[in-house]
Length: 206
Image 1 (spheres, rainbow, N blue to C red):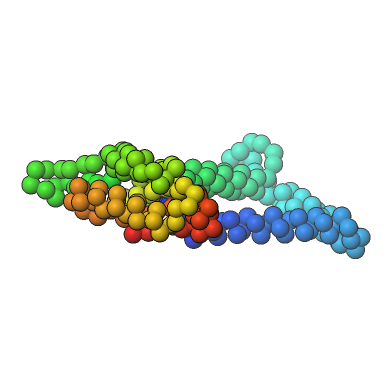
Image 2 (image 1 turned 60 degrees about the horizontal axis):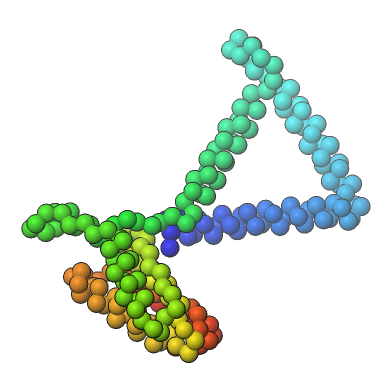
């Protein structure tokens, strides 16, 4: 649950993996197969000669920039800066999606705007789950998914507690909070831990 587009994320990971796999396979063939090594050497020599001719044929206009060199380096530099910006933006978006507000009713009530912080829901639900002896640990967080706040409730069960029983406990707490709030919040329930829960991990969305 984060703000990164899942399809773009998978496409990016696939392309990076394909690039790494292709590069590794090529290096292995160059190192192990003499015929491929000779072809690689010839292709590299031809590529260097062609790049040298391109650089020599595209000098900076002396009337505009009194320096030696090729203006193709500006294109390479711009492409590198653009790639770095895309990668930095992509990396900064990873793991994000948390929101500090779980309810924001601006102008939808006769009393004015109503804003409920995420910490209110997180602390209330986690305190209720902490008091349950069937659970070892619990963690509640809030995310922004498709312009709507959603809860993520992760619990660890004690040994011998079935996922169905753990799900019932969490649902009771969530329904109680929904009744207190006066509206139903979407929630993802992640269950783990305990012998039976280890053999039957569950993630449930309501």
